[in-house]
Length: 331
Image 1 (cartoon, rainbow, N blue to C red):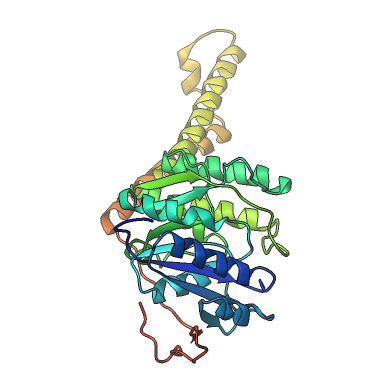
Image 2 (spheres, rainbow, N blue to C red; image 1 turned 30 degrees about the vertical axis):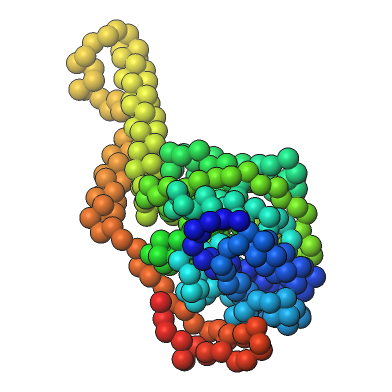
């Protein structure tokens, strides 16, 4: 039993997960009860067309229903906005993340701002086709944040509600929610801890498609613009400047060889530096200046905009109709 642990709100986003949502909710409830952790379980039914909502409620969860499918991130933001407790834990409804790690993750929250279940345990079933993209994105995010990230987008984690709310303006509605909050909190120097977990083969069909890789990459680069633009602009600027300088030196050597001698006067009597060299030199200078301006703006403004909650209906455990979107208070 975890003594003196704060109550936790467990948010489970679900979209057409009738094959696994009942068992997921049931297991989460049993694990937390056995650990003595006070909790609420919120299943956000993201416009499912199957029996997900009824099964989740039958298993003992409060169901928050989106009238239409809005995305994984939107479901999480709705749950966070309506959660009663300061500590938020999230877990997928597809049976991939073992709920038995929740007590350890919640206990670790006593010394961290966010705790992530990193899929680095003994039994990890990540599809082979996703591993190269996952490796690339993780390395890119590690470079941008200057932190070692064992798992960038794990869907099993815990964090404080007040911390997540400040990022609502940049947290996306789709699958890159977890990636975004990881990069954002590391860039803002929050204490993010990782613990190894196992990862099971999912029940049902995955909602992630190959083209999402490009969306994830774009999103990570966009985050660098919001938090640490010089990490992107300085390497690009210096690459252009080095190429321009190298090509310029080559232009001078070729020009001098054409006059059969090393006569400096030849440099002032004819065109020596090529347009290519000038383009790279000017591009490098412009990129560097833009990066410095962007960094100054970010440091001056600071803070994150908060988003709004909309378009949901709450079904309680007892099956009573809860607040509609017109009655609920925006966070």
